[in-house]
Length: 166
Image (cartoon, rainbow, N blue to C red; front, side, top):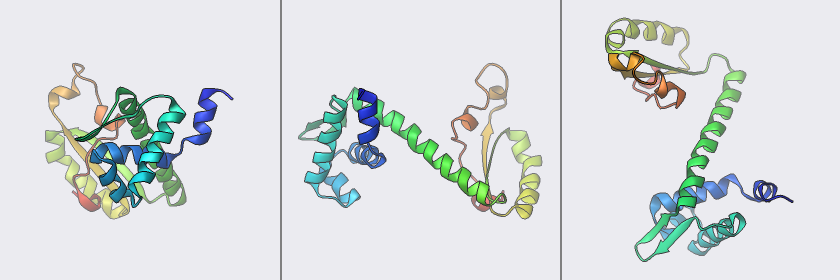
């Protein structure tokens, strides 16, 4: 079996979540508390991932743990995996109920202050289960000098208006 086949059959989503928790908390003990596992179980899971992948994922020291370059690379891709999984689940929910979902908008300040509040209010009355996310973009960023719509592509438009109402 090829290396990638071996990894895809043995590496689980929970392993990526565990590694993320260890790195975020900077300690096997703190991560074990968050995950409701024993510290030896967390240490063993990390060691098994490292053995499976053939690289060290974290550096262990007296001051806690830090991700290695390999660990950072895996965590970066793990973020993308979980984001895609969240989007897949959201797609299933939207297909089950087309009146539920989210709308992400990136606009300049004049539009955000003028026209947009009324539009969102009317839209929210008609579709109350749709969440609205709005990001204000400086007018200069709407010109060709900077990448357009990066916030939308990266799904980083913050939710500013709870319940979808401005």
